[in-house]
Image (cartoon, rainbow, N blue to C red):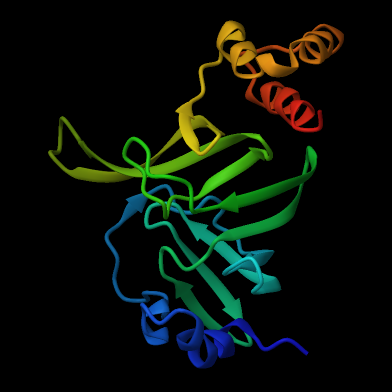
Length: 219
């Protein structure tokens, strides 16, 4: 029987990760008074049963989890304990979500090179994985809005989506442009051209671009 995630972090982590005490890796979820915000810092407000990878060899399955995209931390409920894993401790979170559009699979991953305003602790949604990875960064930013009549200031969470390619160890901003994407996949030009024509790929549609890149990664 695998030990629960709380037991592992509090008892076993120091032997593997001497750079940070275990009591700093996992902290209680803040429960005091918070400022009033509109919106949410989470990718999904609801907890999902997810697999959590702390490293390539340390995995916890079916842990109730949600991801805070403002702080890049992971909140969880395990063995009746609510806690938060600090940024940098989780390498990957994956889960399946049942929606009205069917079952959607999500894989969040950290550890990519710092790029633009993002650190190696940034969670990216992996849309295509392989020699050419397609990544989606969902960012939550706090915006102050002032009411022109009352003068009251309201804090809103706004969501920003950006897409990237990770190729040969390098991060690149994805351009939703046929010429740009085809140039990135040029070493398999014949097969890629055939796939694009057969599937009528719309290069403005990120799901279709991900479909194309996933195919490319099989070649």
